[in-house]
Length: 210
Image (cartoon, rainbow, N blue to C red; front, side, top):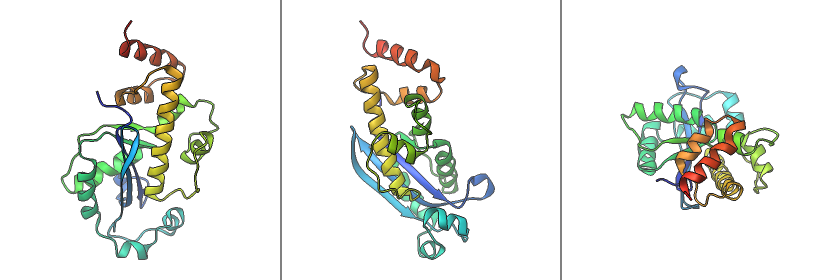
């Protein structure tokens, strides 16, 4: 049974909102967590083959000059495929990052075996009283120290990783489960908020039968 504290947390910066409209990745950042400890990082700018807009430049701090000298998406994503091999994956608003990972991997005929879980959807169930569930807000809500430099891929992945570990620790303390299975995080993301306590009670009974 795969544990939720051994995963790769990833984040993309992109030219736009969807690869379905021709948008591409311009940066990937990822953090490898093993048994609750950050052990390795991956970061790469990549040239999408076209200029990015001034909005994306302002939003990310990445400009066309930086990307002009960066390797093409295909090269960076081939390296990233090796980095994530065999690991489950976590992202904040994972549906966004999964779409870009799938599209960039499809372009190089690459695949991955890990499954995704979403820290944002998890947070909606675990921290129902949070003012909102943006990453920056959740970092503040849970008291994680931050420099506030969001919207660069590695920094966002690093902060998501720290938040993920805090959330797992809070779940373990609140529900008395000493090691959260990755499969449980996936179940939680699909569970209505009012049914979370029941799910966790049933999961605890399954893991620790009387």
